[in-house]
Length: 355
Image (cartoon, rainbow, N blue to C red; front, top):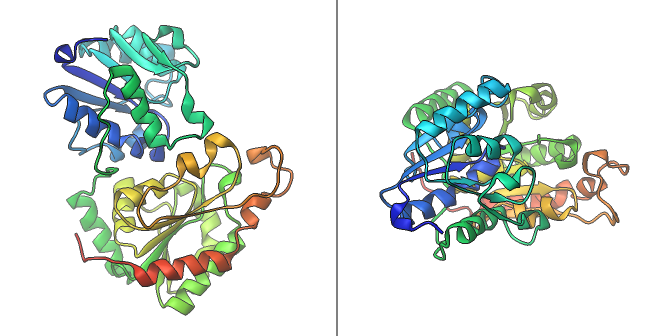
């Protein structure tokens, strides 16, 4: 193992989705504590850059556009040359892909730490990918890699981190004035996910939203990506005037404030669940699938007042998005039981008028 006193430049890579990057932020804090004077760079994709820009534990954000400027082999080669000029001592690859492993190799980074998968023979320190077993949370799996790879035993961290900026706060305040939303007087809802095997039935969401508005007297703010606007239009029509549809209208930074100012967040298994935890808003997360590496044990929210619903439909094998039973595991989660938890968390919510 390299002497820690000789480590002055560290590259951490995480090129997958929003939630994965947020769940990696404790790594930055631990590295900063153990290497207080090191230059720490984080490599992410354009879609997730707002999750790390402004993080107090890092010095630099590098953007690898694997679907755009760096998609070709030549583009990736040029990117690796840029990395080489930065003279990193260590590359910590939290999500091992062929491209990222190859980039770190071509960049000549002397210590390359990652998992035994794909081009792992190009790594100098490689370890079994225990995260896919579902025996530990994704956060702990990330920290385990630096324990094994760098010999760091003190893995304490304070929280997940998501940057909340002044300019995005002002933009969200303007939207609230236009829509009549008030801080802590609404529940945020995210009814989409990356695949159908993560999506609670839309009619269940519709029933839940109706009860939140009519029985709790709260408004509902629907959030989601631009590709989801057609799907959420049906939800937005429920209780017209009390349901505000922000789908496709928020930047990632603005989403952080909408979740921060919500009384509660209800969501499918998706990245915003972890943003909610980072900004300390209680969350109810709805999970399907029974695969070990995709379970709440690995991907569940980590806030003190968060809750998870996850039902066993008795499937011997989970076929995920190729399910032949109509995603029964998700349909088994009833609007009544979710509403009961919503009511409980709303009634006991402790909040201040921050920001």
